[in-house]
Length: 97
Image (tube, rainbow, N blue to C red; front, side, top):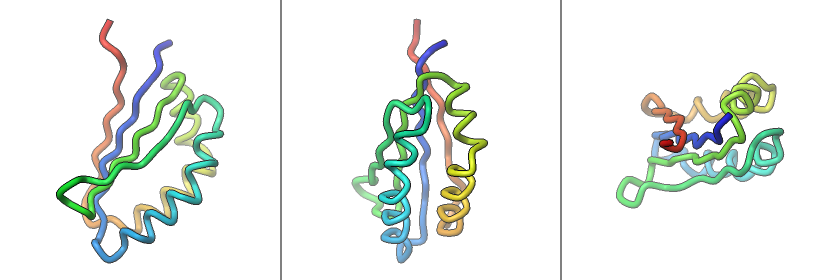
């Protein structure tokens, strides 16, 4: 199976961005140590300070799906989605052969 790159674009209410950063800071080490996760980081849009991107690398799509069905994901996502001001955009990418 192929490694997977997962990018999630998140748009927050501007006054709640610090709360998201706190959630990410607390969750990042737990996500990074989840079985099959190669690494996870967050980026901020250069011109829209309320737009963030989480970038994670997974050994396989199955590893990502295992994480997405975990209690860790459910707890983190519940806290994060309460801060949204728009629907997230999700991209799962693999290398071209």
